[in-house]
Image (tube, rainbow, N blue to C red; front, side):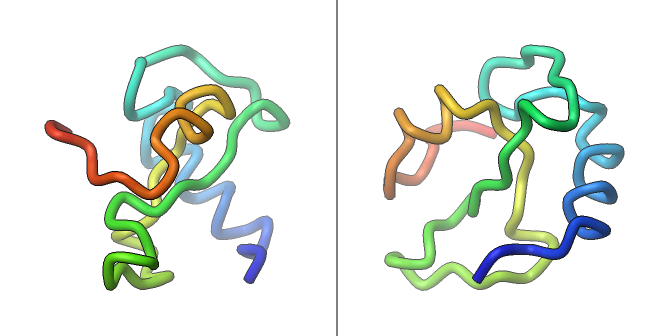
Length: 69
């Protein structure tokens, strides 16, 4: 399920326009949403489980759970 743009806008501002993994400053079009706790591991689409990430970090994370946040 693709999140609505307003949800992405909220998370973009909430997370300070930075990737939550590498802290890179992101333009809106560069940002992607990622599930902190992957859906494959029981995570939900709840707004508190969605975080901002750059595409590189999102790809590297895959379905793992980050060791720190």
